[in-house]
Amino acid sequence: MDVFSALQTAVSGLKAQSFSLGNISGNIANSQTTGYKRIDTSFVDMLADRDARNQAAGSVGAFSELTNSIQGNKVSTGVSTNMALDGQGFFAVRKKSTDAGGGESFSSANLYTRRGDFAPDKDGYLVNGAGSYLVGASLDPVSGQTNGTGPIRISNAIIPAKATTSITYSANLPKSPATANASTSGGLLAAFTDGTDARVTAANGATSGTVSQSNAQSFIDSSVSGPSLTVYTDAGAPVSMRTRWAKVAAADSATGTSDTWNLFYADKTSVTDNQSSWTNAGMAFTFSASGQLTAPTASTLPINNLTVDGANIGRINIDLGGGLTQYASATGTVTTNDLKQNGYASGTLNSVEVGENGVISGNYSNGSVIGLARVEVAQFINPDGLKADSLGNYQQTVASGEPISGLRDSTLVGANVEQSNTDIAAEFSKMIVTQQAYSANTRVMSTAQTMISDLLNVIR
Image (cartoon, rainbow, N blue to C red; front, side, top):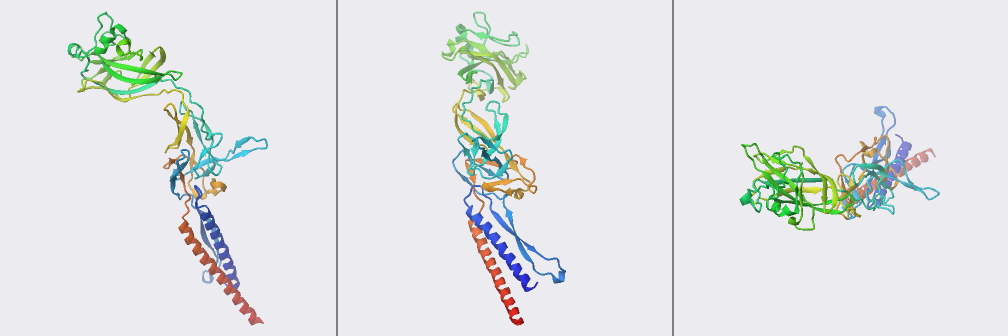
């Protein structure tokens, strides 16, 4: 390398250090930008093709090095629609444009960002502070199934009422029920003195039964209280469903009879138990000597044409997946382990929250928590291969690979945002080193200039 080559190399050094300083200044400027990923500088030597014995140090090139895979700190904002990704991945977003007629539309292509300071705009669409709209799948509030994809919109519309169609129930029935007349009846419900029989057993072959109001007190004395539950009609009207359990047969090895129970529900809720008639749910629940349910074998049992206070609820399925047992109980009463139903009244949206699985749920005035949308998160094999765009967005490239939809090992943190991954102290250190290197290159240039001047003086 001669003096003139040294001068050219020093110029490349000045350009490279200037490029590095530009990246440093951009990182410092965006140290408070939500979701910003700092841009480091990578230096590469540029060598001429020479024989190894004549090889000389060459010039230098500077290239940007993205840090998309390095996560910034999370900070709580208290805004329920804000969200931060804990782990790898990017939010899928789109841009909105306005045509000459004032009409608005969204771009068809996705961009990707870590900026999660999303909040509803005037139309309910979730948009971040840089104007990018969050993309995801809209969920049907009734079925929970996906009913569309695109920019996520949080609607304030009233959700319609949903009639109760299923009750999940599990409990333990006492081996020896503590009924009011247990001392005389052994805790068993018998046929009534007027000749009517509300029991459903294998012996009588009945499939239904009703306790009249005149026999209500005798029924109360021969049964134990079951759970009470509010169910809903098609219009969302709440109806209180009261139940009682009656043991209708005791185990007898001589006749092959098993311990058998019947479930009854009241047809009125506005009066006391003995002022209401009671309807048998129409199923004989039999148990083994060890207290396990032997019949029915199906886990879901129907109650047809459920009517309370004149309101027809219709068919309700009782889900016994949680288990129904008959173990000895010191109190002689029913112990309810699980009791819930799937209906609700109409409701208005009170608030929203973002779950770890990316589902945005709405909390409604009727107490329901319903999934409204699922955030689209994209993963890339090489996230540092994405092309940086303005406003904190990135574009897919050949180097990044195709987007892979899903959180995988990442989670979403609601009411948080990710801060810039810029470390001010580290940037200041790099700035000092860059300044020193830039000054050193200027010294090379001044030295080379002096040497050239000396050469010219010799010629003179």
